[in-house]
Amino acid sequence: MLAGGALGLSTAGWQTVERIAWAADPNATSVCEINSVLSCSSVFSHWQSSALGVPNSLIAMGVFGTVMSAGLAGVLGSRLSRGYVATVFGLTVFMTAFVVWYLEQSALSIGVLCLFCVGCAVNIVVAGIAVTRVASRTGALGGGGFGRGVAAMVGSGADLVAWLGLAALLALMMWLGLAL
Image (tube, rainbow, N blue to C red):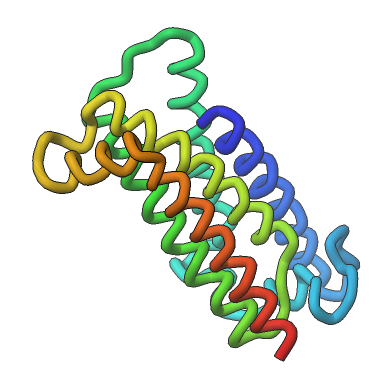
């Protein structure tokens, strides 16, 4: 959680700096302007980059900051409440769904990828693996069907298959979207 959150926060923070520079001068060159397929500024100019009203990187900073702080609290020996861990799990699932949608939009609708967005996708998968396991271990998802299902997935390792399968699906989607 700490690693995924910290790396995600760094990636989203850097993207925010690039986004501010682009807003000040849309003709300025971003550090991730590699070619016509890998270009942050080309993505910044589309509505999808501010889908919830603010730049997506600001939302990512909040989510990754929360995940990172929970990971740091755990490393330092704190016992987080089940409700807090469940909230972090929910934020991680939300961010994962948002990243899947956004990369689908980038690859298949816009036809351009932002390297920072790809970095956020990698980091949410890393964080998601850890958050899922912590939520299961602490019983944060309850004893109902969902909580038992997640616990069974973690116990069998199927959660890793699901998260890594999602990463593979994202990679395939990006490759297909950009190769066609």
